[in-house]
Image 1 (cartoon, protein in one colour):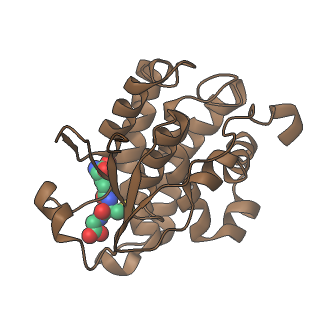
Image 2 (tube, rainbow, N blue to C red):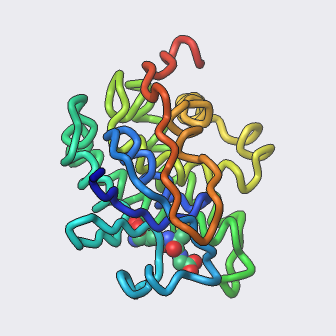
Length: 228
Ligand SMILES: N[C@@H](CCC(=O)N[C@@H](CS)C(=O)NCC(=O)O)C(=O)O
C-alpha cells in the first residue's frame, strides 16, 4: 500500500502558506493539499489546530505543524542536499526573517488594508515597510543575487512572498518610486520562477487533493548580470 502523504491545509494567496508549499516542493515531498476558505475553515483543520491559521501540516504519524517556519524546517529535515536550511541559519538571515514576520508584516498590513486599522496612514506605513526590510534586503542582494549567495536558501523562500505582496499593493508606485534595483531583480526572478509557478497551482477548495508534482523545479536562478 502506498504510504499516506502529509496533508497541508493551505490558502493559495497566503504568503505564509506559499513559503511552506515552496519548501515542500524543493524537498520533493509529495503531499495532499486542502485549499481552505478563510471564512469557512474546515472543522477537521480546527480540530487539529484551533488557532485557525494556515498553513497547517498534518504528518502521517499524527504530529501537527502549525507554523509556516516549522513546516519549512521539517521539509528540509526530510531532504536538503543543497543546504537550503543551514544556509538560512546565520544571524543576519534570522534577523531578516524576524524583521519580515514582525515589523514588516505590521506595516504591510496597514499599507494594504488601512481600513482595518483605525487611524492607519497607509503612506506612512509603506515608507516604514521600505525602511525596515526592503532597504536592508536590497543592500544584501547587491552583494549576492540571492540571500543564500549564488543559490537561494530558505530565507529567500520565506521572504519573497511578503515582498511580492508589498509590491502588489501598488505596482505602479513600486516600479516607479522605489529605487531598489537589486531587490526588484530578485523579486522578478522569483515571480517567474518555476518553483513559484508550481507552488501557485490552483486547486479545488474544500477538499484534499494531491498537490501536483512539478517536473523540474530548480534551474539555476537568473544571474544578476542577466536581470539588472
Ligand atoms: N505565524 C503563522 C501565521 C499564519 C497566518 O497568519 N496565516 C493567515 C493567512 S495569510 C491566516 O490563516 N489567517 C487566518 C484568518 O484570516 O482567518 C505562520 O507562520 O504560519
